[in-house]
Each structure stands twice: as C-alpha cells, then as structure tokens.
Image (cartoon, rainbow, N blue to C red; front, side):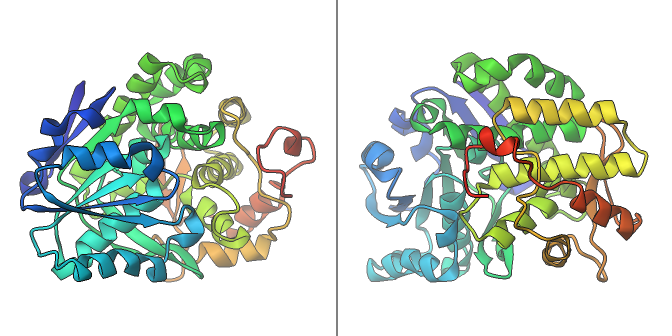
Length: 372
C-alpha cells in the first residue's frame, strides 16, 4: 500500500492506494468520528462492493442509500434521497457519510455531507479510475443543473480517500478509458515526464496491469494533491486542473447528461485546448499531433460531435465557473507540460477552432459511442 497526504493544515487527509484495501476495516475505521455511518452508492456498484464496505463498519450504526446510476441523476431531486434517509434514521451531526462509487456518487455524497446539519464528515471510496485519480481528491462536491454542469456545490474535504485498485477489474473498458483522460491531463499541466511515461505505458494501462495502474494513480493523486494544497478554493493555480473542462462541460450539457462520459468530453476538450493554443502560436502542430495520438491510443474521442453547433458551444461555455465579467477564461498550453489560464485571446480564433473540430466519419468507427 502507498499512502499520500493532501496537506491542508487542519483539513489534511491521507490517500491510501493499494490492492484489497476494502477488506482492511482498521484502515478506514480510524477516520470515523461518531457512531453512525451512512454508505452512499449506486445500483451498479452495490452488488459488487456494498456488503464488503458495510462489513468494515460492523461496529457502527449503519445505513445505506442506493442511487440510480448515471450522470443524468446527478441533480437536486436525487440528492434528496440521501437527506431523506439521514433524517428518517435520525442521524446526527457526527454522522460519517461514505461515498462508494464513481465520480457522480462521490460528488453527491460529498455535497450531502457538506449540507447535512451544515456539515458532517465523509470518506471517499472511489471505484472508477476517473474518480480515483480526480474527483475523489480535492474536496469539490456538487450536482448538475440543466443549464450547467457542477454549478451547484461546495468545497468539502473528505476525512480520507481509500483507493482499492482491485475495483478496476470490474470496470468496463469504456469507463477505464474515460479515467485515462484525466490521467493524461496531469502530464499536460505540469508533469511532462509523466506524459512521456504514459506514451510508453498505454498498452499496460489498457490491459489493467496492476503495477502500471498503481503508478499512474499515485502519480496523478500526487500531482493533484500538490496543486490543491497550494490553492484549495481554486482562486488561482488550481484552475489549471480544468484543462479541457470548459469545452468538455459544454459538450456534456449540450448533448444531455449521460450521453457522453465526462472523461470522453474532457479528452475532446484537451484536444480543443491544444488546437486553440496552436492557433495562438503557443505550441506547434507536432505537439498537437502527439497529444491526439495518445488520446486516440487510449480509445478516446478527439473531436466535437457534429450535432453541436459552434454558437451553441460558445453559449454553453459562458456557463462556467471560470467566466469573469463575461469573458471565457480557458486553460491553454504554452507547451506540453506547461498550462496557463487566460482570457486574453481573439474570440474569432476560438470560433475557428470549434468549427474545425467536428467529429469525422472515420472516428465513429473506433469511438465507443455510436450516437453521432
């Protein structure tokens, strides 16, 4: 097992990474403050890991909430299922919520924990690669609105993050690839050595090699943890973690939540960020081609679905947490491994980038979604 630390003073917490960690009850029980535990999961994960998770809290008063599975259920209406159970069972403000599942479960359980009785502790047990390397770390929680993704939420740090790599063996190939998009992101932001490593170890990752996955997860969590420690509330440097996300969130919202996976949308968004950076003269065509080649190797899309129009994309990108005084602030590249946040660009170049990035017929033969 490898243990990392997210250094946030009084709110610091460990990230445990290893195999068969769900069976190590002592590891997680020390992070429960009170006597009540509510496990939040979904109908896909529950049959696989709920029983083992509940067994780890056998000494506590426990209950469970099983949510429907999918991004389209990440909303305030479904969130009330968690509050309803907490209130009916008279759970107090020492209750610990446990998020068992992917990014949707983690975001919703964390947001419920931030709100219930004005804040109770919670623990992250992410079971998808995307959640393990990204959404479970850093304390961002929330739900979607039909007009914008993740626009309702709170910063609420977990007590710990427990990453059992064995859970990835039950993850389907498409979800695994979606998680790898977020892994690639860290190499592009500020870890060029990691980007090079990913280029040479893509096959091992796709084959679910335990050693390769352990390294990639630990490196990603380490990179993110360092940035979060410097800028917990995203007032500056942490915004770099949104590389590809302004584009990606617009794609998710425009298509309808659940039609495309978050990691798939981020993969397209990173390609758009690189192509726009090239139009600005900050990176060259070889860098763009290198990034696109890696994303395609990870079985991810690289272009905008053709049903989304340029003006629609621009309108949706305006509903973004980084927008300031009506200007869309984007995370762009001044080189591979060197990202910046800026709103200083020619809007016409942005339009040209979006117009040139439509999904081609060739790509639909390998992209796992046959929708467009």
